[in-house]
Image (spheres, rainbow, N blue to C red):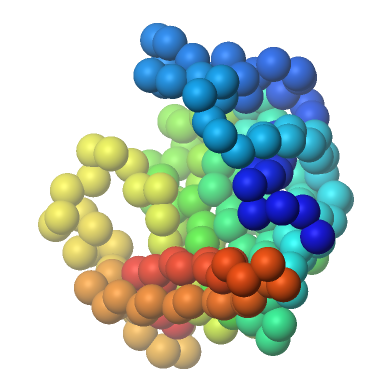
Length: 204
């Protein structure tokens, strides 16, 4: 068991060494790692990597994004969460990498930047639609779906309209106004709690 003063940070190996460090210095970030009292260990990961932790594990899978991206599945005891952001789908198909990774997860957080109607001009930008999120959720028998990473130009009215439309294809309604808060807790041997907290903004 590592000391609580050791912090392990995982970085995507494809990005190359030094990228993480460069992102944490001026002008991008006000401080570097140097002043931190903790010992920070950087560990490279790639697609299809499983990282174990105290009572949990995180598995990575590839996403379709310019320059590449990774999705994550967190398994904790009998719970699971999948983070699927920065990915572009191919209309008419389901991404098998995602479909296999998110099977029967408790929560999938999905890239809902565009709608099917506005997607075509944005091909190659590396993002998906809320409709594709629902297709994946139904195919993978996902319990809860969070529509996330909306286009910054979407107003509250647009998001409200998406919410209404998203209710129709789902067995149970989606509600963008309904907030769920889940907390996963594990108590490592050195006495500190590991806590994962996330909010579900759309519940299927």
